[in-house]
Structure formats: structure tokens, C-alpha cells
Image (cartoon, rainbow, N blue to C red):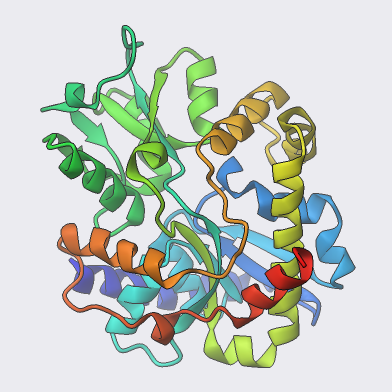
Length: 332
């Protein structure tokens, strides 16, 4: 499966060159092009760093594109159509093991647990029991992706066996569920809250609360980019670390108002609920420097899913110097 995913990544990287080049996209020296795996309140500090002017204070601009899956985000980085990839660190592990030249390195971690919520078709009576998923059909992500592997890790730890639907594109999962596929579906916020508000389903549990901490979403870039633009990388990390601090110290209603322009189709009330949901499960790191123990657990999860044939040394694909420096400055 890992070989198949690498084939998809490299094929997609080649394919991405044409449409992006045809669009004639240009960037100045202040711009960092970030391809995010999906657009979610789970990544609130990234958007808040922009809304609060923290990127401007660092004299940098952020250009965001949506990859719609970690494989596509990695493809954009490999094709030089994105400077920074923002997705699960498993994609870097796969690329490194595939022997890629100038393999990206993780330089900052944002989320420390799964950010998806399990949505069912009916409202559970009383407290949700994970054992009730036995034999159910669940849309939970694609093979090799952290969302699916984390969900599998949870089920395995609880000795629950379910039928996981894995042949649906990440961006089409919710639509497939709404169309009648599966008994449950995992969704990120604000999609889960919007889905519930529309009466299409009910949020029954937090996957991240059940799984425990794991390095879930990280920033990565090619070593060549990090070497050449170390000042911009540090400035970006400083802006986001300040935004995390702001988020933790500010009421959810105020944060929701600031996020509104990044989620035009979502109500402020749904955004507030989403922010509170992520605060309640302690979703975000304080120090963006990934810890080796967390990286070890990530490889445990990947190995359990049968997607890891060889362990990777922490230092080979993770660099923490800039993130640790920024953390020391802000929390001195």
C-alpha cells in the first residue's frame, strides 16, 4: 500500500505542474505558498495568524491552496508548486522511504490529536458506546492516511471490528455519507457542526479524545527551501505560535468572529461550537517543535495499520531548531 501511495504522490506531482503553471501564478519574495490538506477550524491558528496581522508583522504573506488529501499536498511540494505542505507527517515518512531526493522535512507541528468527529445518522440514546460500532459501515478516510489509521487504532484498542469504507476521495466523504453510503462518517469542523445543524446527522464522539495525543498535522518543506528561506520559516512559526497563544487565551465567540471571513458558508454560531469542540479536546500544541516520543507513537500507529515496513529516525525527517527558538522567545 505504501508503494501505491508513493506512486500516486509522484504521479500527482508531475500532473500538478501543468495546471499550476498554466494559471501563471507568481509570487514575490515575501510570499509563502502553503498547500493545506483540507480547510478546517482544526487549523484555526493558521488563519488567526493572518487575521491578527501576525504574518504582516513578520513581513511575510501567506498564499493558501487546498490539497484535498495529504498525498496531493505532498505532490504540490515535490512539484515546487507549494513552498510548504501542511498535512499529516506520514506523507514525509512515505516519501523519505521512497528514496526521494530533497525529501521534505517537518519543521513545525500544529495539532496533537485527531481532529475528526464521528457522525452518525441517528442520535444515540444516552452516552455513546464505541462498542456499538461493531459490524457497522464507517467512512473514515483513505488507506495510508493518518485519519483512517488513527480511527483503526482506536477501534483496535477497544477490540471493536467495523467495516471501514476506504475507496472514497477525502473531499467527497461527507457527500457520500449524505448520499446514503455508510452508517457513520468521520468529519472535521466546521463540516461536522454544519452537517448536524442541517439535520443530516449527529456528532456522537471525538476521535481525537479517544485516540490520545499523536502528531497529526504538521508544516513541512524541502530542505533546500528551509536552508534558503530560514528567516521566513522562523517568521511563519513565530506568527502561528503567537496565534496559538491568542486562541488559548481568548473566548470562543471572539475567535469565531475572526474566523468568519475564512469560512463564508459557515455561521458564527457553528464556528464558535467548532472552536469550543477543539478546545475541549486540547487539539493544539503550545510548542510547535515536534517531540520524538510523539513521532514514535505515530510510527506505532502506522505500523499497526500495516503501512510501515521500516522505521525512520526522527532526525532524518524532523527539524525542531526554529520552532524551539520561537517558543522560547514567546514564552520566555
